[in-house]
Length: 164
Image 1: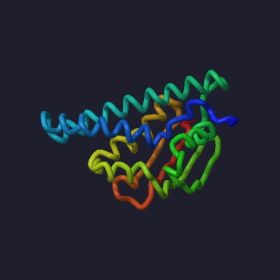
Image 2 (image 1 turned 45 degrees about the vertical axis):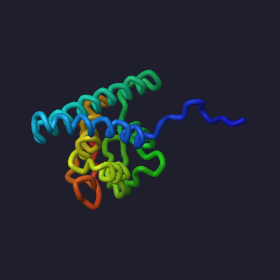
Image 3 (image 1 turned 90 degrees about the horizontal axis):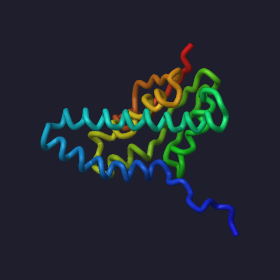
Image 4 (image 1 turned 120 degrees about the horizontal axis):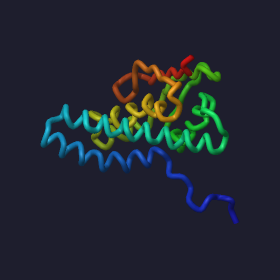
């Protein structure tokens, strides 16, 4: 007998693959009817809304289990959900209560979107979520990032702060 859960969590990478397969079709229809720029804007706004709502769900769960606002250490602990199965590899530079700096040096999400033929919108599907997730999770948290693997950089530079 094992202690494995009856319904183990689906890795986030697989969730994003399922979402992307559907969104690809929606994007193609929107692009045909309204042009690529409008299709990108619609997808971007939909993903932003989804990320904020997901952040709120994680915030509510944190409040129920721990009380108070979730901080950067709580946020860092959540990252295991996105890293499952080796989907991400990061190099941490600073991890405190008010600052979390790391470089993402491998991103299977970027690889997956390229393989699916979604390079054009891959950054909208995942990278776009990173800063807006914070809006729902903790409005005092902010992300500064100047580059992403999905858009051709060697690494993603994540710099999170808790505002004063």
